Image (cartoon, rainbow, N blue to C red):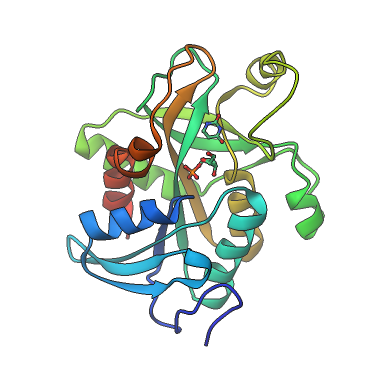
Length: 236
Ligand SMILES: O=P(O)(O)O[C@H]1O[C@H](CO)[C@@H](O)[C@H]1O
Ligand SMILES: O=c1cc[nH]c(=O)[nH]1
């Protein structure tokens, strides 16, 4: 079998998939952390691999950027390949002064202005939620590894380059309590809910709207290893 976007055969993808936006981050994780990784997808260069980590079979696959993209890949993984858990491991821009670059955040909700969930199935709320069970596994894994987590709401935005200055952030922090911004979790959490599956999101702060600190593209591809280890440890 295959889908328009994934050439994997049934059975080639593990029950748990780690999903970075960047397919090269997926390749890095497979080559750095997985034993005997086997590539199952290269359609559109959206690389996917399955291997073992501490004896557990785990897959890792890129999602691309934005909700339409993760919407497609996560829906197919859940509905066509028997995937039960997707842990997004992404980068994000900090809105909160408490967050520094390389800090790791676990989303307890995702706020968005996006129409994704409404169009997908008529859901008209502006927040979606991760699996509590998966989040607890992630919290336990982070504690075991001695890696601190910030926990809170993240903003899933459709827009990376926004005109008109940063004044809009005040409403996102003060009214919607968003700690940071990324571009996929709202759709991922929604797909998981409508399909009866589990999703979670860990992000590493790549830049800050508060301090203007930034990380390089190379660091975004290869240095966000704390969240990778937490997600690998949490995977079933
Ligand atoms: O690093 P990833 O996982 O791609 O996540 C963030 O980075 C991209 C924007 O640069 C968006 O996909 C955003 O969600
Ligand atoms: O979506 C994102 C990711 C990182 N930094 C941002 O400002 N936005």
